[in-house]
Length: 366
Ligand SMILES: NC(=O)c1ccc[n+]([C@@H]2O[C@H](COP(=O)([O-])OP(=O)(O)OC[C@H]3O[C@@H](n4cnc5c(N)ncnc54)[C@H](O)[C@@H]3O)[C@@H](O)[C@H]2O)c1
Ligand SMILES: [Zn+2]
Image 1 (cartoon, helix red, strand yellow):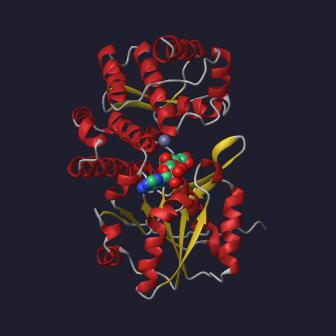
Image 2 (cartoon, helix red, strand yellow; image 1 turned 90 degrees about the vertical axis):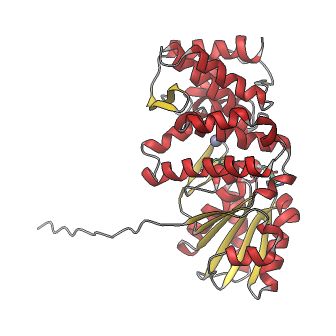
Image 3 (cartoon, helix red, strand yellow; image 1 turned 60 degrees about the vertical axis):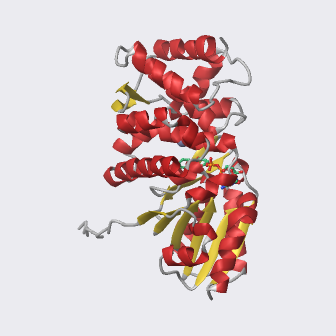
C-alpha cells in the first residue's frame, strides 16, 4: 500500500494599500491615522542615517500615542544587507522580548525595506510588516511587491523570500533630504518602468526633468504614483516573478554584472541606466528597436545627469564573464518605448560582445 493524501491549503491573496500621504511624517495626527491597526509591540527597523532624519521621530510619535515602540537601527548602506545583520536584529528582538504579536515598521531605503521584509517574514514564522520607504527607489520599487532578500559575498539578493506588507505609506516630502545621486537611482527605476509599460509615462518623465530634479511636489507625486501603479499591476499578475514581473528586470542583466565588476562603486541606478542602454542596443541590433528610440533613451538619461562613466575600461572577456556568472543570461528586450517583446530572451554571445564593445567605445569612453 502506498497511501497518499492531498493537502490543499487555500492561499488567500494579500490585499494592501499603498498610501501616498505627502507630509504625513511631519504631521503626527495624520501619520497615526494612516497606520493600520498594530500588534502589541512595534519594532521600527531603520538604518543609522534615516534613524536621525525620520525613524526616531516616528518611534516617538508612536510612544506618545501609547504604543510600545522601539527603534532597531543598523549601519546604512548595501554592505549591511547581509545574513549577519539580520541575525543581529533578530538577537536584539529576542533580547527585548518581542514575540509573535509584533509589528515591524521598516523606515528607510531599499536596503532597510529588503532587510526588514526578510526579518518580518521569518521572525516567529512571520509578523506584521509595514513599509515606510524614504528613498525614491524604495518608494517606487523596493517597498512594493514583497520581494525581500539579503546579499551573500558572491551575489546580490541570493537569500530571501516573498512576503507582502500589510501597508505601504509613502511621504514624498522625505525626498527633500535625499542626496541627488540617490534621487537619480530612483529616477532610473521610474524610466525603466515607463520603458517596459507606459509610453505616456515616458513622455511625462521626458518633459518634466527640471521639475522632478527640483522636487516640484505635483510632478514628484504624479511620477511616484505612476511608477507604483505599474509595479503593483505587474505584481498582481505575477507575484512570484515567473513571467510578466520579470520585465522589471530590464537593464538588470547587464546592470547587476556592472555593479559586481565595479565592486559597487557604480550605484545601482548608474549601473542599471547603462544596462538599459546596452540592452536597448541589443534590441536595435536584432532589428526590433528603432535607432530613434535608442537615441531617446540615451537622451533621457543624460538629461537627468546620468553620465554613463565606468571607473575603468574592462575587457570584453571580463565583462562577458561577469554577465555569464549566473549562467546563461536572459534579457528583457523592447521593440519601442513602453513596448516589451521578451522578458527572458537568450542572445548569441557575438551579439552580447558587440553590445559590450559599443558600451565601451561609444557610450562610456568616447
Ligand atoms: N525588493 C525589491 O523589489 C527591490 C527593488 C529594487 C531595489 N531593491 C533593493 O534596494 C536596495 C537599494 O535601495 P536604495 O537605493 O534605497 O538604497 P539604500 O537603502 O542604501 O538608501 C540609499 C542611501 O540613502 C539614505 N537615505 C534613505 N532615505 C533617505 C532620506 N529620505 N534622506 C536622506 N538619506 C536617505 C540611506 O541611509 C542610504 O545611505 C538594493 O539593495 C536593492 O537590491 C529591492
Ligand atoms: Zn533595480
